[in-house]
Length: 478
Image 1 (tube, one colour):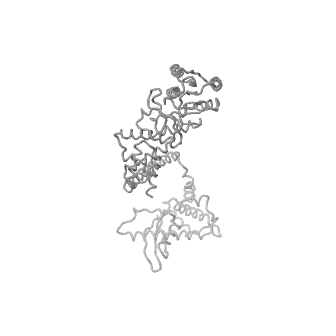
Image 2: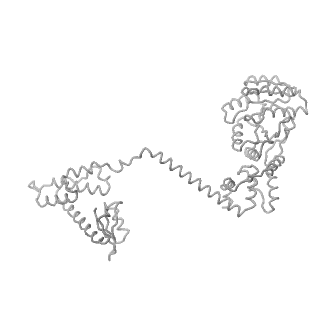
C-alpha cells in the first residue's frame, strides 16, 4: 500500500490532484482543514486489514511516513547517472499501480548499471538499494526479474476484447428493454383511458359502444371526434350512427341491371360461385336468361366447374371454360351477343403467388372486364385489410360482402371498406337464389350492425378498451 499527502486550497482541487497522480483507483484515507486550505491523505493498493479502529491515526502516520521515505529514496536514486531515462514500450498503457512497480524496477535496473567515474558504485548506495528492494519486493533483489514481471503483463486495452457471448447478452438486454417498454405503454394506456373516462365520460362511452359495434379503434376515434357532446347520450349515439352510414362507400346503381362483363375474385370459401348464380338470377328476373353467359377460369378446385354448370342448367344459360388468356379472349369474342357475362375465378389466398397470373389473365383478356372483390363479413379486420390490399392490384370496381347471416359483427368489414374507400355493390345474407342478394345501402348496413350489437350479451372489458384506445386518446388529454 502506498500513501501520499496532498495540500490544496479546497477539497475539489485536492480530489483532482489525487485522481491525476494516483489514478481513479485511489482511496481517500482522511482529510482535514488547514489555515490555508485542506489536507488529504490518499492511498493506492489499499489494504483495510492493517487498520485498527482504535489506532487509525497512528497507523496512517506510520504508513504515510514509510511511503514518503520510500519515495524520497527513489528520488535519490533517480538523481544518479542513468544509461537512459526513456520508458519501456507499453508503459503509458499500464494501470497506476503497475506503473509504480514498473518504474521502481526500471530505476533499480538503471541504478545497477550506474557507475562513478572510476567504474565502481559506492558501498553506501549499494546498501540502500539492497534494503529498498528487499522491503518492496520481498527479497527478490534481482533487477531483471522485477522488470520482466510488469513487462510480460499485457496492457488492459489488449485483454478487453469482446467475448463470444456479447451478441447473446445484447439480445437478452434488448428483450428486457422491449418488455419494459411494453409494460410502460400498458401503464400509460391505462392512465390515458381512465383520465378520458373522468374528463369526457360521454366520449368514452361512445368509444366503448363503437368498439363493441365491431369498428376498428381508428375508425371509432374518427367518428367520436366529429360528434357533438352537448346533448344526451341517446342523441349522441344516433348522430354517430348517421355519420357512420354516410361514410360507408356504396355503389349507387344496380350494376348487374346495366349489364357488362364482371369477374368475381376473392379468397377461397367466400361464396363467389353462389354469388354469380344470384347475380345471374337477379338479371334474369328483369331481362330473361338469353342475354346471360357464365365463364369459369377455376382449374384448381375439384368440382368447381361442375357447380357452375349446374347453375347454368338451372338458369338455362351457357357455361364456358377458359384455362388461359387466349381461351378467355376467344370465349369473350364468341359471346359478343350477350349483355351480361359473369366470370368465376379460382379462390386464392391474398398471399398466393398465383394471384399475379390471375390478375394478368383478367387484365389481358379484355379491357371491358370489371373486377368485383368478394369478401366475407366474418373475416377478421387484419385479414380483410390484407386481402383488399393484395387484390387491389386487379383494379377493383367494387366489392360484394357475403355471409352477413353468419357473422357476429360486421363492424370490422365496414371499417375496412371505409379505410380503403372501396365501394360496396351488393350484400349477401343467405343461400337462397336470388332472394338473399341485396343492393348495398349504408343505412341498412348500420342497422344490421346495431342489431348484432344489441343481441350481444358480452361487453368489452376495461382492460381491452385501455389497450385499444389508451394510446390514441392521449391527444385528447394534452
